Image (cartoon, rainbow, N blue to C red; front, side, top):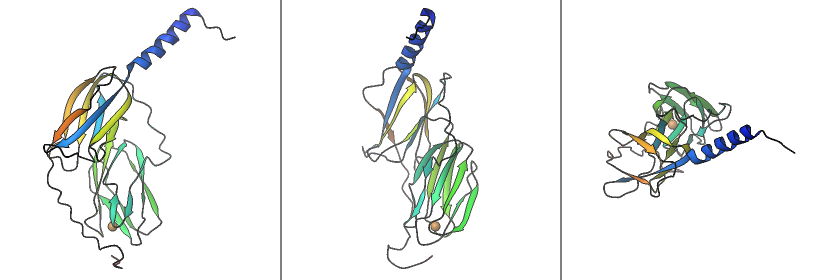
Length: 221
Ligand SMILES: [Cu+2]
C-alpha cells in the first residue's frame, strides 16, 4: 500500500487543488456595429502575471496546413505559436509560387507542382502576408504568436479559450480588415464569465478580387 508522509500528502493535495482552482476560460464574440458576426478574427491572451506557459510543441509535425486549392489559399487566416512549422500542399493542377515579404518571415517557395508539400517554420512573432507570384489574387495571413492561448473566430464570430490560468493578460484581437488591432488588459477570474465578452469592430471593405478562372475552364496559368 502506498504511504505518503502527511506533509507531502498535504502539499500534493494543495497543489492539485490550486491547479484545479486556477484554470479558467475566456470567450469572445466579435461582431460589426450592425450585429453581423465576424469570422477569421484572431484572439490571443498574453500573460502579464508570469503565468506559466505550456511547453511549445516539438516542431516535428506541422502545426497547421495552408492548401492551395481552386487557385486560392485555404484557409485565409492561420494562427500558430512562434517556432511552428506550416505545411503548404499544392492541391491544384497548376503550379504556384508562394512568397512573403513580411518582416517576421520573408520566404518564397518557387514554382511547384500538384502533389508537392513544402514545410516552412515561422520563427518570429507577427503577421505574415502570403501572396502567389502567378495568381496575384491569392492571399493568406499567418499570425505568429508567442503565447499558446489563441483562437480564431468562427462564422458565428465566437472565439473561445479554455484551460488557462487565472490572472492578468494582454488581450489582442486581430483581423485582416481591422484598421487597428484591439489591445487591452483583462483579468481572468478563476470562474469563467457566464457570457462571452463582446467586441464591436469596424472592418475595412474587402478589396480582394476573385480573378481565378471558373472551375473547369481549362486554363493553365
Ligand atoms: Cu498561385
